[in-house]
Image: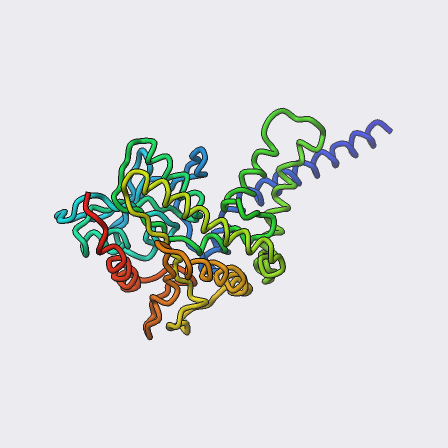
Length: 340
C-alpha cells in the first residue's frame, strides 16, 4: 500500500515538474513569438527601453551604422545640426515616425528641418509615444530650464493604434496592460493562486497572440463612439496645454496631425496592411480633423503625402523622401517664427 502511494506521489511530482518546466519554456519564449508575430504584422519596435516615471519609458542607447540614440538624460535620437543661421532651438516630439524609423540620422524630420532652416533641432520623440506622454516630457524639459523657441508635436497615429485597443482607455499608454500584469504578481503571496500567476500571465499572452494570428480585432473605437470622441478630444487638449506652456516662455507651438496611409492618396500596392485597423482611424481621425479645421496653430498633414510614389513603409512610417515632404510643409508653417 505504501509503495503504491509512494509511486502515485512520484508520478504526480514528476508530472508537476514537467508541467512547470514546459510552462517556463513557453513563458520565456513569448518575447520571441511576439517578435516573430510583430514582424509578420509589419510592426517595428525599439530594441529596448527602460522605465521612466510619469512618461513610461525611454528607448535605450543605440549605436548602429547611421542610427544613433544617445544616453542620459533623455536618450534622444541623434539629430544632425549644421551651421546655425537662425536663432533659438526647435524641439520635436512624437512617436516612432518622428523618431525616424526607416531613416538614417541625417534624414529624420528634425535633421532635415535643421538643414532646411538653419535652426538647431532636437529630437525628443520615442517609440509608441502618445500626445500626453509628449506633454509630460515637455513639462519635464521646461522644469529643467529648457527654453525652446519652437516646439512641434507630431501626433495621431499612436492615439488610435494604442488607445483604441480593447482594455485600454483614452488615458492609456501602450505598456499599461503589460505593467499592470507585472504589478499583479509583485509582493508577498496573499493566496495560493499567487503561485499560478505566471501561468495565468502566460495564458493571457498566448491568447493575445493567437487572437492576432486569427485576425480577431483587438480594437473597439468603431463600436465605442464615446471612447473615439474622448481620444480625439484628449489629443486636442494635450496640444492646447502644450501651447500654453510653450507660449508662457515666449516660444511658438505647432501641433501636427500626422499622416496615415488609410487617408493618403498614394501608392499602397507594395504593402500588406493589418485588418480592422483602418476602421479605427476612420472612427477617430475625422473627429480630430474637424477640430483642427477651426483651430489656429494646429495643422492637418493627412494629405501632405498625396503623391504617386511609394512613400509608406507600413501604415504610418515613411521613407526619407516622405520626411522631406513633411519638412517642407513644416518649414512653410514656421517660416515666420520670431527669432529669439
